[in-house]
Length: 156
Image (cartoon, rainbow, N blue to C red; front, side, top):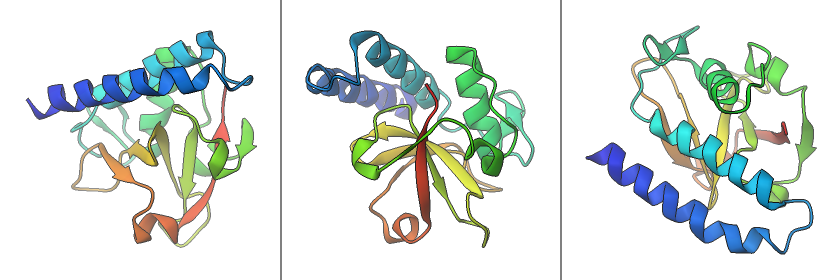
């Protein structure tokens, strides 16, 4: 039930964001549809367990395995294996430029770009956080995430 409610909320979020996208020349309808599909699939994996080195929903994901799985599944894009390597591909973004489907990076292990998640809109991202936890949504304005933010990238 929780997963269904999350997916319904995501659908409403993407649907409400679509009209705004029409006024942004860099955010056309095809990209909007692809981003919506990517975010919808990413959200469908909520509650999948964290597993260090994990790259599949059957066994679980670490953060970069989760992001890589979503991009491979939805866009047939193969990303590098680690969050640090992923932080080197795509186009860097200012936080004001974030769109659903962009990647956000954090320093969670005392080194830059040690964590990655997928931005879903409304200053939130979805990620696979740590051992003993599950894929979940976070608010970027929480102090923990604000103090560890390393930047964002657009892959497509």
